[in-house]
Length: 171
Ligand SMILES: C[S@@+](CC[C@H](N)C(=O)[O-])C[C@H]1O[C@@H](n2cnc3c(N)ncnc32)[C@H](O)[C@@H]1O
Image (cartoon, rainbow, N blue to C red; front, side, top):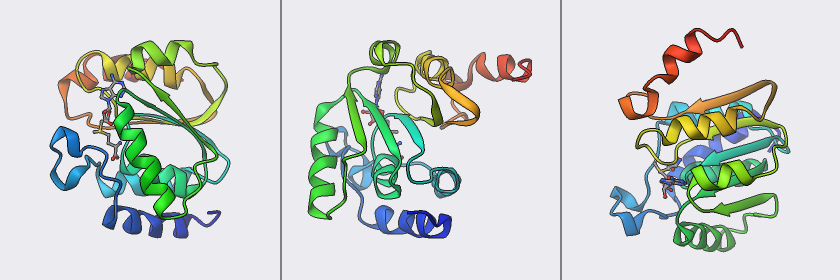
C-alpha cells in the first residue's frame, strides 16, 4: 500500500472490523486500541517494506499487515496471535512479511537479532519499567531518522524517567 492516503483509509476498515484478540482479557469490543491519530501517524510512516517492530498486538498489528511492512510483533500471549492469524486468513490478508515473537518483551527483545528498524511502536506491557525496557531495546535498533512511537505516555509507569532522559539527549 504505497499511497499514504490508502493506508489512512485502511485504518477505518480495520477499526470497523478488528481482530478481537483481547476478548480473553475482557476488552470492550474484544480488542484494546489506541487513538486514531496515533494510527494516522503510523500510517504516514509505515510504507510497504519498511522495517517495523511493535510490542503488544491488536489493531496496530493488523494495520502493519495491511500496509505491508516487514513487521515483527512481540507479544506475550499466543492466543492473540492465533486469533490475528485467523482474522487475516478470513480476509485474505497476507502475513508473509510478519514475524511473531511470543514471550514477554523483556525476555524476547534482548535475544532478537539487532537489525536496523525504521519504526518501533511500543504498546505492550504498561507496568514500570516495561515501556522503558521496550524503548531501550527497540529504539536502540532504529536507523538514522527512524521513529519510535510510545503509546500511553499519560501513564506515569510508562513515562517515568524516560521523558527527563530524552529531553537531555541530543539524539
Ligand atoms: C494495549 S494492548 C495493544 C493494543 C494494540 N497496540 C492496538 O493498537 O490495538 C497491549 C498488548 O500488550 C501485550 N502485552 C502485555 N504485556 C506484555 C509484555 N510484557 N510483553 C509483550 N506483550 C505484552 C498484551 O497481550 C496486549 O496484546
